[in-house]
Length: 112
Length: 113
Image 1 (cartoon, chains in turn orange, red):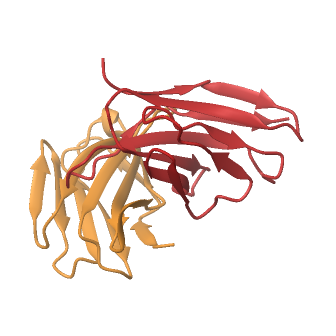
Image 2 (spheres, rainbow over the protein chains, first blue to last red):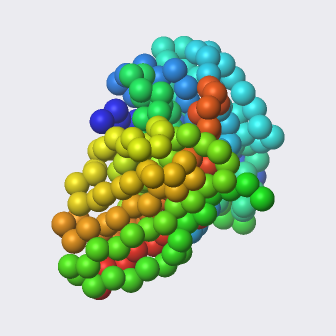
């Protein structure tokens, strides 16, 4: 299946620090989605990107759709303890809009 | 309230037994999905259904079966043929339009003893 390569796998940061994570694919994606999963829960959508070069913010979160359409990054500014969780990139495959794929996730730990 | 409901939240099963996980949505969404989550491996697609009476295999469909007899329901059966069924199972649905947002249930954790 289509591979979404997400990095880093995990991050340990101090409260107040900024965080950056990214996702790459060998194939072009027309939509990039970023989700957050709290322990024992289902993922929740944070940001959706639909256009190459698009930069979108949601509070302290900012995400960009790479110009090549093969990558995306998510930044979190001034991290707080409740940012802890697993962050996933996702998107529908180029050939089937209903076939949704996810990266392996970035596990974020924030130390107070 | 609109949403997607999975049950049971926790399930224990003996080896060799089939088990069915329930997923119901009242969002009037056409597409529904089942993912499996193992530690460090993200979400892997088991099956998805774009419309009633139709479903497609994902990357890891072996040992699983699904049905889509009603728009609001997409149950997943973990059969005895699934070699390593202990995992966290997530159901999701998606509506029409280009937003692409999947709405997830709270998950079902299956443990095989």
